[in-house]
Amino acid sequence: MNLDYVLEDFKDLTDPKVLVHGASETMNEIAEKLGEKPKIVTSVSGFESRLTDEKAMDIMMMAYSGLVNKRIVEKLQALGVQAVGLSGLDGRIWEGRRKDTIKIMEEGKKKVIRGDLTGKIEKVNLDLLHLLLAGGYVPVITAPGISYESEAINLDNDRALAVMAGELKAEKIVSLFAAPGLLKDFSDQTSVIKEINKENLADYYEFAQGRMKKKLMGAGEALALGVKEVYLSDGRIEQPIAKALKGEGTVIK
Amino acid sequence: MNLDYVLEDFKDLTDPKVLVHGASETMNEIAEKLGEKPKIVTSVSGFESRLTDEKAMDIMMMAYSGLVNKRIVEKLQALGVQAVGLSGLDGRIWEGRRKDTIKIMEEGKKKVIRGDLTGKIEKVNLDLLHLLLAGGYVPVITAPGISYESEAINLDNDRALAVMAGELKAEKIVSLFAAPGLLKDFSDQTSVIKEINKENLADYYEFAQGRMKKKLMGAGEALALGVKEVYLSDGRIEQPIAKALKGEGTVIK
Image 1 (tube, each protein chain N blue to C red):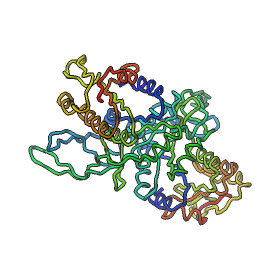
Image 2 (image 1 turned 90 degrees about the vertical axis):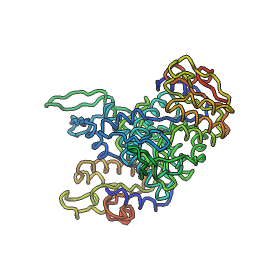
Image 3 (image 1 turned 60 degrees about the vertical axis):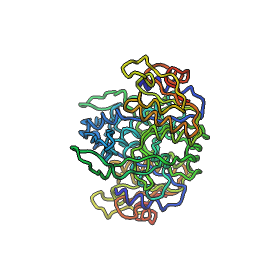
Image 4 (image 1 turned 90 degrees about the horizontal axis):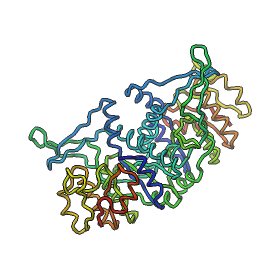
């Protein structure tokens, strides 16, 4: 990802617009410097995920809501965009249900882990988003979110984006990452799948590796909630948003 | 300071209200864990201050706008307060002039240092504050601020609070810290100066040590801008705000 290219292009989009970002690389770097090893677990269904305990949540706040969110706001302000950085905690923008236990496999045995601070988004504070958008502000939103019991929770950004876009009745989502789009052959960067009809989205899950699977699922959710078009495209190139909207990556509609 | 006592009491204040906080201890802890030593310089006028270079600004964002701001928002949300955490960068809430050079004394010689990211607040985005307050939200604001050239800058929190309170036409400021008030004798915790007439504020600077000097200067500025009463009081005790308002600390009016 090239943040400067992304923000330079984002600036030119007509309002209203909302930017959602992650910070997983920065979080890993800070955690490593602080000597905190990520606790990776394997769920019974075979997915690897990171446990979010209180220490990991501290570092999530430092990286996502602190360093990366504020550096993005600073860059957008320098580009003349009236950006306001928020986490999903602020005004309960991203609210959801905490999953307090997770079932994992450890040394071939099933085990239940408690104390994990992750959850699933279910509610969006549209009032606050509309207030800011109507006031001419551009929300820049990131994790964590908030549980119904008011605990900070690690939410999946792609799902949070999908649900929020649906609630906002957004027409388009542009999702950028370090690949040219959804690839038919993971080892061939030229094998981008250009267009997917949303009715057939499930047929394409087999081509998705790692995080891309979550992006496809998020796209499916957003389209089901009324979003018209989802663009999955390359965030490393110049004019990444304009090129995505021209169809250079994968379009799902 | 006891954050739980402060927030529990803050919850009961009638709206509209705004919370401003620092995070210098947390910043020092994170900096130390990251192996970043604070660069302390002595100005030609004899004041010690910390240089804010790009690395220090990163850590400021992690500690102030990230970890501490979001943990306060989380606690306030759990108390039923619709808190929205913001830095002075967001929507240019705290804007000011960057001081790009500072004159220091080093080994008895005058020296000019460039690249310091500090500044002085001059403008407040009242539009965004009023928008949030009218919407029923409680802004929770912290450093950094933003320069006219859109760089993140380290602002003095006490001055930022004073200028913001003046612009908001706030009636009262309650400023809490780890002492029972302004002390006549720094070594005697019972020597609290109960009341100061704002006309005579300058006579009391001699009693202020360290940060307290900045708090007195901030109080003077706030009163000059129309704030009616400034309370300097103990943040370590139960009901710290109620007790401050009852006159248990130092009242300046």
